[in-house]
Length: 201
Image (cartoon, rainbow, N blue to C red; front, side):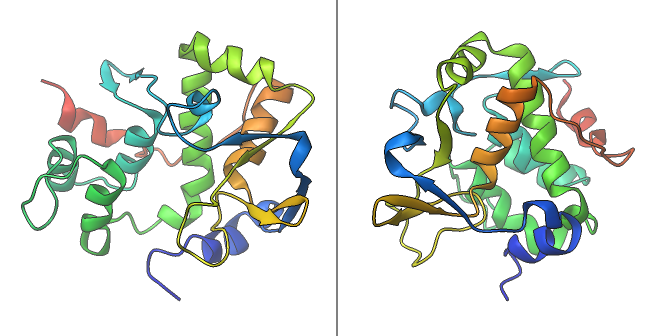
C-alpha cells in the first residue's frame, strides 16, 4: 500500500465513510473543473478563506498545510517551493513532496475532521459556495474523476459505470452532509492549527 493512500486511514479511523457508493448519473451534480458551473464546490474552487488572520487561496491550500506542524515545510509550501527546491503552483503536489519526512504522525486519524473543518470554514465565509450547495438540493453531489488515469476512483470521487457513477465519493458525501445539515461536526487535535503562526507576517 502506498504511503500516500488514504483508504487505509478511512477504514481504520472513519469506518462510517469506508464504502463504495452508487448514484444514478442523471441525478448527479458533477464536480469536474474549477471553471465549470459546479467548480466552486471543488476543494480547488477559488474561494479564499481566512483562518486566524491568515488568508488561504482555496480550501485545498488550508487542507494541505494541515498535514504539517513544522515551520520549514509550511513556509515552503506557502511559497510554492517543492522539497527539490523547484517552483510548483499545484499546492497538492508541493505538499506531497514534504509528506514522507514531515507529515504529522496523527494525520490519518484526523484527515476527515480536517477536511470537514476546511469545508465548514468555506461554508461560513463564501456566499458563492453556499449558493451552489443550495442550488444542488435534490441532486447527489459527486466528484467526477473520469479524467483521472487511475483504473478505479480514489477515496474522494466516482467514475462512470453504465448509467451510474460509482466510488467512495468522500468529498461529495461531505458536501451533501453540509448542505443538508448546515454544519459538519469535527474534532481536531489541539495543535491542528498551530502551523498558522508560521504564516503570519
